[in-house]
Image 1 (tube, rainbow, N blue to C red):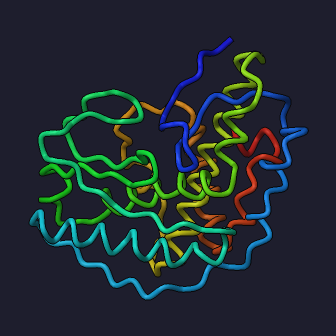
Image 2: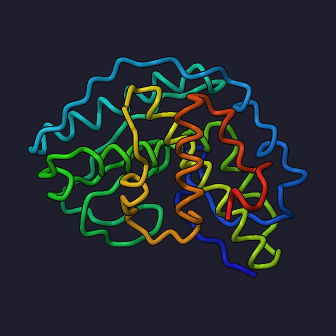
Amino acid sequence: MIIRLSVGTATALALLSAPALAEPVKGAPELTHNALYKAARLPSVACKLSKGTSGASTRKYITKLVGCLNKAWKPAIKDFVPVPVVFKDAGDKQSCSTGLEVRGSFAEICAKDIRVRLADDWIRARSDLAVFTSITRTWGGVVSGQTGIGQAWWAMENGASESVMNEQNRRYYLQLDCFLGVSAKAVGRQVKDWRPVVKVPEFWKNRFHGKPGNRLYWLDKGYRAGKPGACNTWTASSSKVA
């Protein structure tokens, strides 16, 4: 039996963990037949982003990106609630979802906000790759939370074999990758190579992403389709979520 790994608070917008059941998933329509998958292609949102190398310019960049994501995903999610971004004090290094002390920049969902701690690694970087990837990756938890996917995952049985549970964890995180691809398409991000995106680290060690090739597959699938229906990892073959 695997102990639940909490990666967010147990709220409507939390990142949730530790499912089980057979593969592909059976008897969980909130996962396999969620209404989200019927949504149309997300509208293209004019989202001209420019990140400078100051704290003020980086905060402005993040605030604008979150606003663009709110606008892009609103048509796809029934009763969508816009999500604000809250910037933590520079000295507040604690993650609300893991309890860890984090030295650098990070983004996570706390209650109903996206909370961001800014440090020099994001602020001084001339490239926006890390901050864009981290914010849009976190946004996948918003989608999961507001559509019932996260809650359904959390509610799944927690007593299956380790291999089965690990696979279902990978289904969840690979779906977040796919949502990242959908988001990138909607805000007009030009991506020709997803390998640098895969290499952007998370602030906690996540061993449930699966093989790099599968991460690239789901990122690209979401990006090419531009709609969440491409992201149903719950009915995919085991080979696609290995």
